[in-house]
Length: 413
Image 1: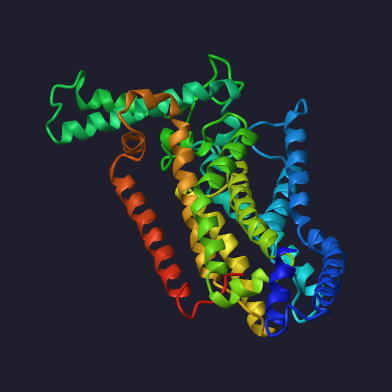
Image 2: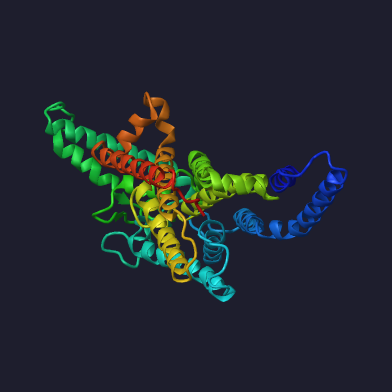
């Protein structure tokens, strides 16, 4: 009724409000609008049912996680299929059609599935936990050698390794020249930390060596903060939703900032609900991307959280780029897709950093701040590169926002 009232004032501004038939014409206009609104209501709700599909998939994944005898370390093949469908519908799906062809729009769903499976294929070769012990290609992968009860031992090993690295650096800088046992003893202890007994091995069974390019810290960060993959997924979804709040506000504001767009929305039946839904849909997108990132944390390529986030964003950006190419070919609007992709990268990068921080959450009380704990986890030099990486993303987001949200800006779609 609010939108219809504004519409009536716009079309009747020259009418005489004191004319005998003015009220009758007003009520007739309002009645027609309400009838049209009632007819359009089911279609408007139907266009947003993809959210219900995403919720149903999450509920199914949770039910499978609670089922007895289900693997806890990584998603099964069926779980990965469900995650691929969830990624396609909630994160990367582009509603609508190309040149009126719903067949091409359906093909987009297949491309979404293929993109995530392609990323998993790369992770099968490059992920830390999918690698095998040194000299034992037939031995179980690293991810299969960690038990649910052995997570605390893994974190303790990684913490001790970081302490020894700091001690070695102190020796090089002559800060700790008289360390117990000398440099040789420190290096020997570091070597022992990479001597591994596979899950299920007895006390007398031989230990295996981690691959030469993998450290125990890499294994801990690749495992994630929780023993079960579902807990990692839930935590990453929550973090991404929180980090995405400013981005959702900016995207909604940028979409309705142009005066002509705001004028149309005030006269559109679903103008106000559409603004609320735009914010909710972006929050669902961030949370959905975080859920996929956390669920596939142990299967994605990269040794640190930002690297895993980057691999997922690359798959997302390729899909959005293909969709934009289809829009250009069929002479449809593209919108500011670059801004959305940059925000996705920023949100998932921050989520990856927070997940790495959560992995060593037991040490928080030992450090004055979380930043200093993160400095210790990334061994300072690596962190300086990470923080510069995040700052570059922030600058890119602000630059794109300034370019597109101006006097001649176009709405984001």
